[in-house]
Image (cartoon, rainbow, N blue to C red):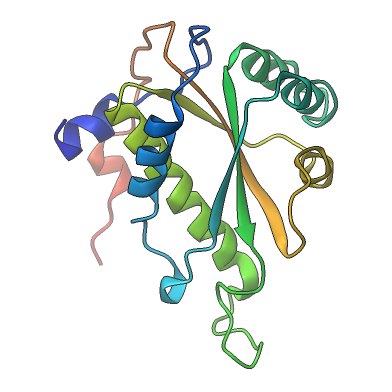
Length: 180
């Protein structure tokens, strides 16, 4: 698939077939996602693929702040990817000081780039994804035994799509661009 076609046709998928994505395909997706740019090439994104139904249900039931939409999506997904990020690398100098006024917010920026790259690579391989942002970081971290020194950046429900999604209305370029 050409890059622009991939960008224009990728949709957030919330209904999945029961078939899990193979580890080989997941590793290909992560290999592509590893090419995402990051602050000073720190490559802080880590991927925890939750296949254990008990842990996945724990996250669905107790870690998404009772947001029913996310509970249903996670329950329907064969796999849930917890995107972790290594702390205190993005936006920092070697002495521990911040490089810019954005301070540690570069971590989330880099995790977002990595997550979107993950989703685009998945789409290219026929795998559906949706990035979920409503969750309790500490509860998710505990549910998956996230290593010390990492934080949870995002949840990505993943599987083979069991739905077709139309593109939502987008703003025009004229609404988005300003030349100065």
